Length: 282
Length: 256
Image 1 (cartoon, chains in turn red, brown):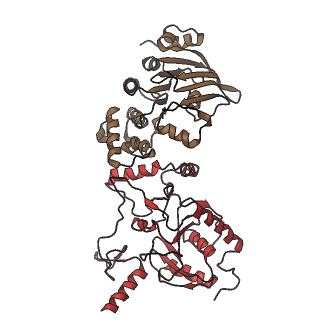
Image 2: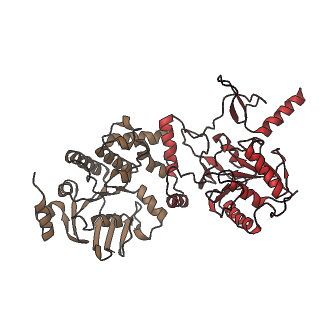
Image 3: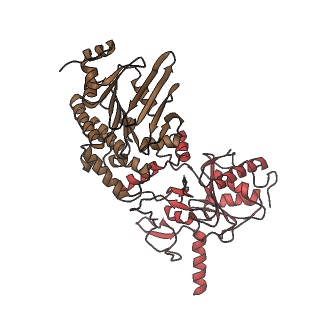
């Protein structure tokens, strides 16, 4: 049931058109940050306004939406955003990765392999991968224009010199299509390999910074590294306490005040599916 | 032998002040050319125009690439100029803080130019960095030290190492001994002289220190009010100055 008084998908048609134009440009130049006019959204900047604007612009009446926050379908943000679109677009929602046509995400890529025709929308707090290294936007723009990314490797060099390995476990910078340096948003480095040649379309929206970028299907996405220090995604060395998975990305959960803790899948849909399968097998 | 860099008819005014007024010069391979003159005479402006950091109002700077092709510097694309500045050319700033990344270790500072031109092997970048620290007489054990913790002289030597690591053919130096005390200056000049001879570098050095110019330079240009008032072999100019301003300049040097 669509709420009355709102346009389909909350944003007005002209805004959606403007965002779609930015999206088309972003898809045409993979990894390049395209400016767009971020609109006031019914939630604060930093809570996923960029992702919501992108979702609102690509969603249609026949879509089925899944929203995850840190991999989970049942956290506050995920529930609110899912309910928001159920209200203003009247679309079906789901928690199943395989059934969704659009998946809006914060901080994770689902464990289940995405397929052609699906769209993954990332919420991005800071789209500029170089911002901690070069504070001037004019200069970072020039570095992107000239593909001048030596500075990012200086950061990797410093990490290895100081810690013996690259000490970035999330938001690990990638090179898209061999050209643009891109922030994958704060997903764990563990998820980076999933972006490479992904059959689904990946769209990124940064509301506060007013930037949109994209990775079209089957585009090469390479995590930066050195020949003698290759990229190695980190994962907690434990099986999931609930479903026993040794492949999925794990959350560490503190269970008491005596140092007790357990590791569980951060992807709730993946974990629940595996638990059901295991019960069925028994 | 053809020149590595040629300039002719350079002119640039800052309001009513002529900073460059019909300046022409040539730099040949392996040659050290010093530009001397008082503050405000246009030395640094000339260096900035020659290195492509500033655009002259008139005149042309031509650069010869290693393959022998000539390029008009101020018509080059920004990407090409940037590449030139980190491969075939180098720039040593007066204040090492302008040329170094103060929050990046010594090794990272030296490695930056290598990584910018595509080096992607951590081990070899690090080995090269250690080798260059040794060459500029900094203990390679300080490879992970921050430049902020280095002395002024060490910072300047680090900046030189960082500049020379890609084996440039032409290096611009803007008063490299400016902020250093006398004994450190002498040591730095000695080191620069050895490196220049070793690597066959061409150097354009701006200085107001006549002694430094005599020690390093093969050729000397004396500037005043944006004009080159006298030029020639260093010893000739300093021992037998022709222009009255050069005579004043040479006479002003205190004999130790």
